Image 1 (tube, helix red, strand yellow):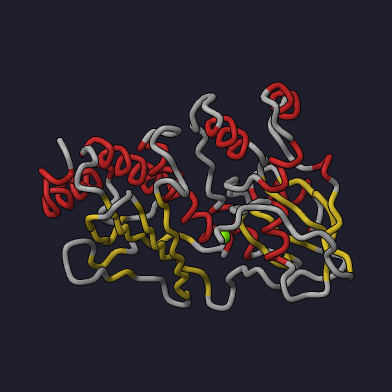
Image 2: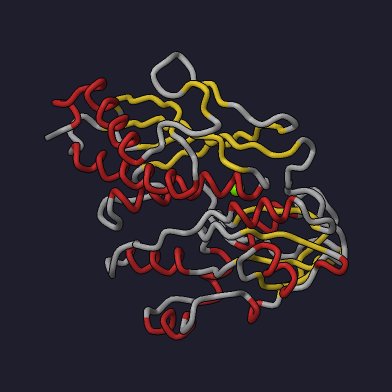
Length: 313
Ligand SMILES: [Mg+2]
């Protein structure tokens, strides 16, 4: 069956049923969910609301031939939740604006929906609203709402000369799979983890500077972190955390491992700076509940090379 045969309201009802089955139509933060003119979400007393919007467009962010609809849906919500993680926020909910061609199969939309609601359930982010419209290509625009203690949001600014640079988890898997799939070898199956708990822990630690999630690539996101400052990163590429046998697998696939690690992006790990007694791999790993690697330091001085990484225009 095609989307056009189901119609707008049929499609919305179908998405609502899938969300209901996954248990993500309601949540402690939702006073009023889908079905009214607007949703009412409720932060706790003393909290501020964090909002972030991302678009995922067929042909730009994902391709039907390189990943399943379910994987595309999961990756889309992970990317959005990761922005909440980078702000140190907990999810309150999200909205989903969907653009679909009339001739898209309903099973493709089912797959996207299944992926979204699965990640939503895992991370406690209720689906509180959205919109469906006809479109030339498929697109998902996700707006995530989060809550953070008043005045405690992590931000990109705050890095200082002498800070150590850290990253959670591992880099490279997403870029490796996407690069291979673009060449027609294999599919993109990897779904990153939004570091929500780690972000909330980071927001409570004194001595943390700036924080960003790695979406565009390590170099590009470091440039965002140090934008508008007279600071430059000094990196140790051999310390970039990567999966076992990553370099060998890249060489075999004819890919440049360091290039993927530096400019691949879509890892959705947290990249941040820290100083003082807390700025150690062991203590950060313990407090964040995830492996943390020190990959360099922040120095005074201008950045020399223009960063690589994904740029839309
Ligand atoms: Mg981000």
